[in-house]
Image (cartoon, rainbow, N blue to C red; front, side, top):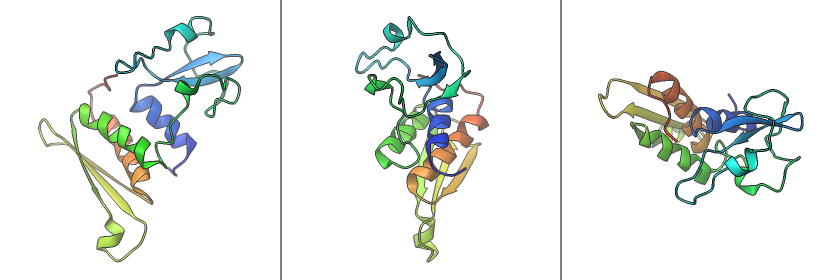
Length: 153
């Protein structure tokens, strides 16, 4: 899968704990409650049409631009956003290693991320990407599907 908004949406849903909600014939990814900032989307969602992915996805929040806290991060293209993914995966019991495989092999532009389940060391997943954020996201999706642990919010 290429880096971009589709991958960003998958990361938000499968790794970061965001959920789909319906409003005005569209659907939006909504972040979970943030215990550090106190941000809770519940007050906004009280008048929405409910949870679900029915309708046209609006990943850029063009219809409801007044909610900046709900903006989908650019996980697969922005290293700062990708690092949030690393922290989430580590919090769910995986160790993280990234390598510029292109540099080591004389090829520009390839990155590899290796994730190992920390508790037993039995599970390993890796992914290659054109950039570090891209590889981080691909490996995180593999790790979440390789484990029976649920992602904590």
